[in-house]
Image (cartoon, rainbow, N blue to C red):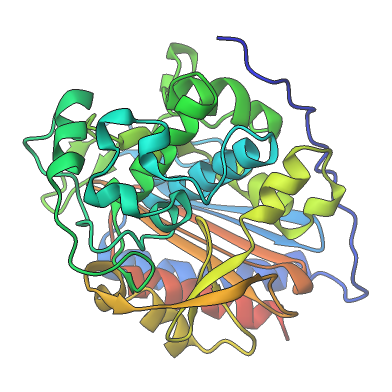
Length: 381
């Protein structure tokens, strides 16, 4: 099906603040100090770090993309992003709304008639995208293996809470949001991401389906038994956790989020839309894709917002009326993992600072956040 064309975005960012980037030596020392002990402690085989300060990017590569073939990590190594993929799903959803293809106030039954009148149809697309549908689980049940079974699962699902009142982090929730987004665009999600979204963002080494020509750059992940693994296919894998990208591409995406005003339409609007805050959960503001924290942000707040309680529990939420643009100093972040990979992305637009950390092991989230926060604090000195 023919898709609406998108103007390619120009992400040649210009510094918008007066402070100077740290020296290369000082930045290297700060990153090494944060990353090397963490990798040793958690036996992480390889890790790529990218740091953007006032539009200037530095790359720091550690260890191996493949232990078996002794291939070193580079800024072009492809890593599985896990749930950081959700930030792309959110951007595509925002694009679809901006083009008039859907509204976040719509309900699933409008696009999937089999769901009309079911409990899931009481949730809006926004509530699906923000994990507020009423208690969908973290993962899709193993027995759900195709679209027919997916529709039957949602048709028979029973909520634990009214939509919009409780946040329960959920791949099926944002997965259904992404699935409906693709239907509204008259295509499949992987086609929309690979063929439309990533090129529009200027990302040349980011994929749902890794092409044969890029397989040589695709790192192997390592599970808890140090066995080489890669992500398995599943219902809503592309929408929820299936993107593979490099540090070079991800820091470009971060720069787009730091300064979306420098992008061409319609992607400027789509990226800015993902910065809107819709629900407050403790110190965390939930948008679409990104999670937000109001300044000043402590390490303890970041770790609490990315804790087991937040990722696996039901957490009371307050709807922000009206939805909020991020106040000055807001910090955005997102974690992600698959069986053999762990990712973390953080940026503060008003400080023109962004950090990307991609690893080929699912090491503890709290360790990722501590390392990124330490680098951020050094950048502020």
